[in-house]
Length: 339
Figure (tube, rainbow, N blue to C red):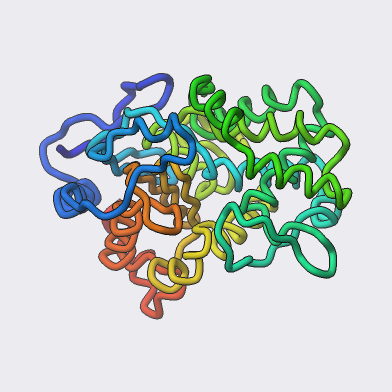
């Protein structure tokens, strides 16, 4: 179904409405949806019991342009929790609140080459390798907790809601499930406390991290949040400035090098745009100054990335020439024509 710009909205977010002919981007994501809807690779995450309840057939693709046009197909209204897709956003918040030098005292920016929940730190500094793995993300949450205390969650929700263009909430069932079973993350928090990387209220900081991961979004929300980053930190529909331009650069950089766990090198080689995945099945990708792209599909590959999400983004990058190092710069030329 083709969509064109309209003043109609869903929860405050502008939508595309039916029109005469299909837009090229709509046609493309319709093709991607049909191509991969029956892909059966991957398994739904079970290590957080509540996530195991997800329907493996759920599948959505959404693209939001830097000027706020929305193209979508499939289950783009299905709510799911952000999980690790929240990590680049909280990293950007910490940079704005504390400054680059202070944040880099506690967390590095190097790819780890390990799984997202690996309990490893840099040998020479005892810092987490980067803020996209759990050790680094818990550290970032601790920095925000030290800054804002009991108001830290409201601060996070306010910023993430501004990026999505509507008020976001927390899935209490997923939060409780993570809190009950998150023994590995609890071990990480106390290891960080042992090395003085997080402050003494490590349990409170970890609780903030669990709640951050349990924030509910839709595929459309993630595409809008990606488009906010693509639009230099300003929500393309509401016009609200959400993130400072300098911090957006750092957020996109860390997503490019570390955003897809220990698949990040393959992703940079194959897809070539900044992205972040989450174990609930979301993938958010950003084409700088052009697009926010999101997919939702719960079955994950062995590295914790959505199996359908990887294939969709790979297909879009190949068809649109989106790779940042595309020698023909086909993506920019194509998008200027079709948008």
